[in-house]
Amino acid sequence: MATLSSSPHCSSSPYYSNSSSIVFHHQKVVTLSSIRPQSFGPGRFSLQSKTKPNSIVVCMQDGAAAATISPIENETPLKKLTDGLLNVASPEDRKEAAAFDINRDKSTVSVTVVGASGDLAKKKIFPALFALYYEGCLPEHFTVFGYARSKMTDAELRTMVSKTLTCRIDKRENCGEKMEEFLNRCFYHCGQYDSQEHFGELDKKLKEQEAGRVSNRLFYLSIPPNIFIDAVKCASLSASAANGWTRVIVEKPFGRDSESSAALTKALKQYLEEDQIFRIDHYLGKELVENLSVLRFSNLIFEPLWSRQYIRNVQLIFSEDFGTEGRGGYFDSYGIIRDIMQNHLLQILALFAMETPVSLDAEDIRNEKVKVLRSMRPLKLDDVVIGQYKSHTKGVVSYPAYTDDKTVSKDSRTPTFAAAALFIDNSRWDGVPFLMKAGKALHNRRAEIRVQFRHVPGNLYNRTFGTDLDQATNELVIRVQPDEAIYLKINNKVPGLGMRLDRSHLNLLYAARYSKEIPDAYERLLLDAIEGERRLFIRSDELDAAWSLFTPVLKEIEERKITPEYYPYGSRGPVGAHYLAARYNVRWGDLGLEQ
Image: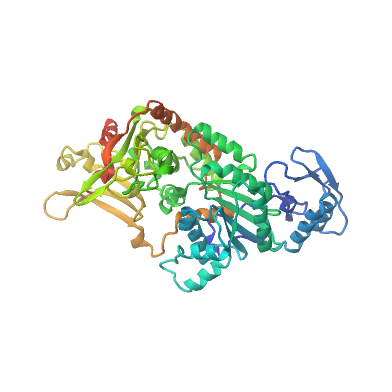
């Protein structure tokens, strides 16, 4: 079977999953995806070997035999399989099986961006697909389709997409030519998200481009969550791959709480298997987040220190220096806890704190993440601080309050800032506070992990540091964005005759160390989805465990109608966050003079 990556350096994982297959008695593998019906939900065929080693029975999923295919001497396994299937298949299925036989060494990938006219598609998805094409990471035969309700022609889609495409800073040769080639593979279909007829029309267009090859289809749902199920249902029944894999990328939010998340998962699984659902959290695709496990598990100096014996606290910080400013309609129904903490920061925490997985296989990694989430102490309201930014004037510039946004209710209590203290009740992390902080309209833009180590027992240089022992604490900082870096704060003697100490940074600044431009997170995640690599996507039990931590406190905040603490636009956030940290003898690492 043809591989999907045409360039070896693009492969994000040694693991690749495709459609169902069978191993014959002489170990030759033949793909059986050609016998799938249009729906990729329940009711698929499977092949199971019975008592006779050279006979094959076609079975329904419930185990009932549909037909027995008897072997014929001197025939290839593929021909035996095809001839047998023709006895039980419709004329249309026979045509597809014949095409599969002819093109058995060729495959194609079709990426359909559902919601192609939206901001996410224009700013992130199409540029990421072009970047993968430019790097040679997409297969020889691929097609990109935009699907949305907006009236648009293929040419209009290409014009829209072309405005957002850029080439790598370090690789600009043949940029215009590559863009033209990519745009020629982009097509558009206008349709409703709940129309099987419109998705059926899309299916016909996809088949025209696939030209009889083994078809693999990826649907990216860049649409509001309230229409996820309609789109999945219609794609399932009318536009799934006939003889290859079908996968669906689902954007957050994955519900508002445990109940709605479970309902969404249950509805998706009416039409999809779990391994076809790729729940995307783009923070997991960021370079420094993916480097977390490399930093820890491939460097001997860190693993012995990665526990409560040496780590005093861990801080996960996310801040933006802008507010909602016209985009508050969506945000107001979710808030900062659901939007950032329950997914981005909690996923990073699980990666940071997990035990060594058995292997780099997706399921082994996700198993360890789930163990961390299930070991976490239920979050209490006393360990949470919420805030909302208010208007502020700096010089001659006035900054609006959150409720000044026309898409937000004037009496909204939705938090734009939250801080929380979480704990993992296991032997490695018992008693270590994990402090999260996320907010909008703060004094800077950053996302980072800060690991503060314990004080040196009986430090000989205490007199030099005075009473502020925090100045003597080693700290490991992993800056996810911007200016990606990893640096370690150490104590060092200032050159000279006296004994004066200062804090120095052992700094790995990515821009200075690596000339190659860092890929966007969506590039890595799209490539992983195409290759069937799931380790950076969220499994349903991970989602359940994450929501079980935050749902009780979210309900309490909303039921008690707790008013958030107000903080000025462009400030360091509400004072309550500092009191929360102080309660656990912690000082936020991003607020010092030297950060």
